[in-house]
Length: 477
Image 1: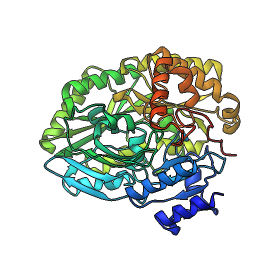
Image 2 (image 1 turned 90 degrees about the vertical axis):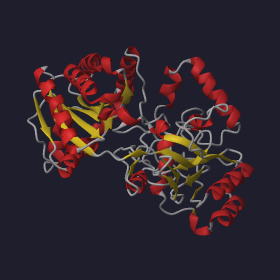
Image 3 (image 1 turned 180 degrees about the vertical axis):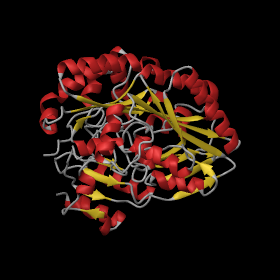
């Protein structure tokens, strides 16, 4: 216990916001319940200046800091290790919308703002903040940017990186860099914003961001389409892109077994089409009108039928029906969890190579692990698959993971490399994939990353053991 540091922190942020002892599992246990740590304390500053004061105090006492937003990460990157020496810095009290500039199509928000609240604040001004993902009711903007989050509309709007114009960051020395620019053009040196985005809290603490906004679409059309193969799904994507252009904002693929799990565990969720090897969820956003949107969309589906790219389709006739289709897609991870532990992969490969990647990797897994079940779904439009491996039916999921996870990962990641892909598309590296990153990233790239880390955080106090460095987070018992 570091009593002098704790006294300084209580004076800085208020005693009620320095939590020591008791049940701290909301901060010390990760979203997947895979990593459990023990914090020296959980500190909840309420302003950027309070964050800076906390960082300065930790620097003076040689204490490492683990920043945390909504604690919805999937790679063990935002919980402390088991040493009891790391400070958990929660940004959830930094939750103000500072400004909405409608003419500039920007909004500036604190890092602890929940993503859904940011979406709603933009919508209240008849504007759109398009970042959208399953955890949007809990995840925070700071965490979204620290991991360069993706989601369901990357195809049209890009990852979190593309939606951010400026940042405010507290450095490892406790200095505040105010880069909250709403400029779309600024060629005045190195792009520090892009350096911090995706750095997972290892270079500094994001405390605020200036985000891009868009006009709200006049209409949206959502449909579920049945396809017989991934080759047909890629063909459908090309057809939709050619006919809808930038209006195509969502293109999600779902494997047949993934939807079987939803039907098994959530039978109340209606599935409007008969089972098919693959389903595609498409969404078009239109700037003109509902009539224009539907006419264009239905013309595209007719062309897809003529080209034998789809076998059936159901078009949502209302907002509620559209939400139901998205709810079907978003229920797959929940159904997986109900089925038992699984080996998750958040991978990306070029869209053109997805069919061959899946066919070859499916076959190799079937040969190496007979009976293993593949829960394959994700953002086909941008090449990102959640290619997850479930234990054979009747087999202990925990035992399967314990005995085979390393071999499954090696097989899958070797296939990803062979198809010119990435082992992390949108979840980040954290503690979970740190060793894989070391093995699979080029020596030149790793050397440059370590040089940046050494230059900005020479004492390795910012989220040590994540992405780069030592002392990985201890697995939960």
